[in-house]
Image (cartoon, rainbow, N blue to C red; front, side, top):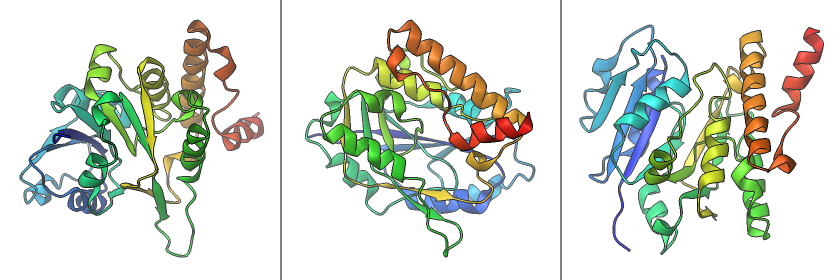
Amino acid sequence: MTKFSISIIIPHYNDWDSLQRLLRSIGSCDLVQVIVVDDGSDCNKKDSLEKYKDILFIENNSGKKGAGAARNIGLKRATNNFIIFADSDDVFLDGWYDLIHNSSSTLEEFDIIYFRPTSKHVDENVKSYRHVHINKMIDIFFSGIEESIRYYHYTPWSTLFKRELIVSKSLFFDEIVASNDINFMLKAGFYASRVGCSNRVFYSVTESYESLTKQRSFSVLNSRLEALINFNLFLINKNKKEYTKLMFFASSAESVGRRR
């Protein structure tokens, strides 16, 4: 199998120390393009990134804010054959590129490969479970039920996408406060000719108490509702009504109920 090239797209806002930790974990490779899109950080410490000569640093001046808008900007500048999305507070594990490259002798045949992630809480005394639901979906895939992961894998990290799929289907992220990735992942899974899973782990998700997934503000809940409506409409229009959802997160539904 020949070497293959990857573009890594990283939305960033204000967390410069974590971003540098992520960049160190990625390392330097001629076949890896690293794109950081800063979403209007309050304190510009771009100079601290000068040591990372190979990264493409872009400031989001589009007027749209959030990880979705930043990822869309990154997609326009990505040039390599495969794409990985990373959050700026996460990390890649040692030897990640070789692990992906050696995970399958037919890697180019897949439009998407979902890899098992791991996760870690910022508080060393707290165990993180953010990776568990993805690993359960991969277990289901390997049990012979292959289609559900196309529609229920909501997060873009720890996943390898063929850039040709994203470009040919004009896929983009919703530019909303929360759940910007739900419909991107849905459409990518639906349009992919062939998807695969790997038991190998190259990505670690960082969980914190301030994570957007734990926020229950009106704007966050409203964005999730908007994403859910569009998610269900797409599935209904594509004759996949059996995969529609009532709510992505049970805790969100409970929060809505309390607001009323």
